[in-house]
Length: 267
Image 1 (cartoon, rainbow, N blue to C red):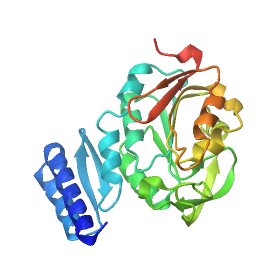
Image 2 (cartoon, one colour):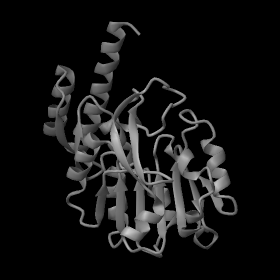
Image 3 (cartoon, rainbow, N blue to C red):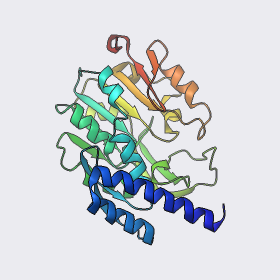
Image 4 (cartoon, rainbow, N blue to C red):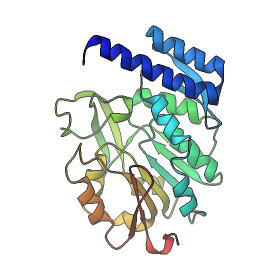
């Protein structure tokens, strides 16, 4: 793509999202974000999307993620799960906290644990979820083992960081920093829960390692909400199908899939 084409694309994107923010957040917020974007200024600005106030960074994938999360992405999941058994939700791949906020609003009495491995993303996540006392942010990667692992930049924006050592789509990805790993059983023990009502997984290929050995803890999870990333790691879909054998699996709106334990399957 030529320099002129890149500039045009960036300008058109700024105008598109500027219009969305004007409608939802007002002209002052939209003007602040639009001015910084056009002038090439990297900064964090407060905006309102879907009635929720959050902070986002310019020149990042924050606005894309927030727009999707806060404008009904999880509504079909909430409809399918009207009540919780354990009052425990695990949000794997918390990014800047917008999905966790939606969980906290939908289930105000639940404990919502949101995990984000990136130090920079996590700092913004903590800021965004601070007003929700039932959200517990954890700076860690969800995995099938504890310990340390390297977080890598695939070059696809802040929402695309991965713990996959050699991503198929970006095998030359660079290491950002080390991060702690935590498992589902460890989280259940840490928060004193006998099971997970909803496990949301959007972990950029990390789901392959998490699910490939058909983990026993899956029986303790009422509903899995997952986005699969076969483009990052071949076999993610097969690992998911194998781990959820005997459950009720359904397509969800968008790119996600749902897997229900039989006693939690929606009608």
